[in-house]
Image 1 (cartoon, helix red, strand yellow):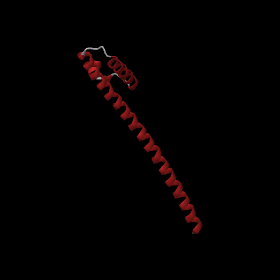
Image 2 (tube, helix red, strand yellow):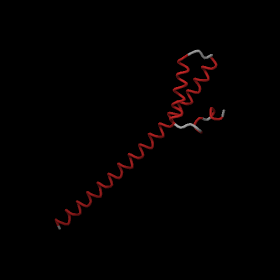
Image 3 (cartoon, one colour):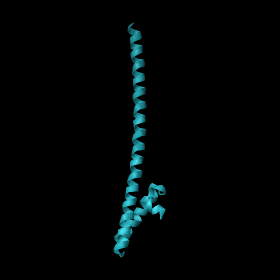
Image 4 (cartoon, helix red, strand yellow):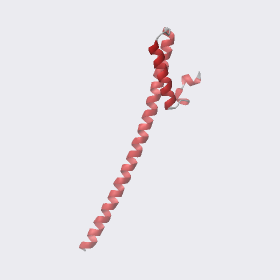
Length: 93
């Protein structure tokens, strides 16, 4: 029951996604009582929220990695330009 209350504590993205797919299939198949359907819908909402949480975290990690890479490229470009400027300055002196 604790896992149902706090799915973030135990489910990874793939597990949450797979369970969400199962919940949707069960809802689409019909045949469940109103109470069962509501419980499935609530669980589906929890799982969808968890999947969004995982995807937002992944996006943040990718953005941070890309920003760090861009920062390194800018720093390398600035250092290269400084070396070129220094070399040109030495030639004109």
